[in-house]
Length: 211
Image (cartoon, rainbow, N blue to C red):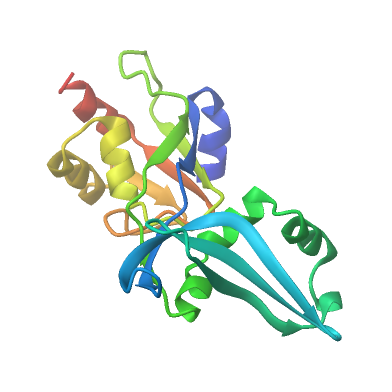
């Protein structure tokens, strides 16, 4: 039986988790005012500067010690018509979601020669798995994230399933837990994507044995 068929047949055993960071990553860089490296936080504000037919757009960061500002370049010397109208409007009014999107864009941050500190907390919103419930053969978990996070999938599963790392890795090795599309659960970091995880009946039996 195909995954799609199994998935639709066991619709009652579908669980959705939405992974949400509590804050944006900090940036470590030299602060001219403090005279040494300091952590900078995202202000969630954009700066836009027009010069003739070109425009520059920055995301403003502030030193956590003295509030000195440092700008991360988003667009440089670009024609405004080359920026999506909706995106331009969001940056013009300092849309928070757009600011967070760029704060989690590691390619942009690193192109600005900045060191990222990913020491942030996350919330996994969604249903809790009831391991005492009479479940059918499998549970399917949908994981969604708006941002490219530095959260390892195995760390999330360990916390949500409330199992030891040893037991989790044993279940992964025996394919009692696997993903669609296939990823290395031990190393995979959650990105802005949809990921389906299958928790097999064998995995459920192992987890139940520890309760």
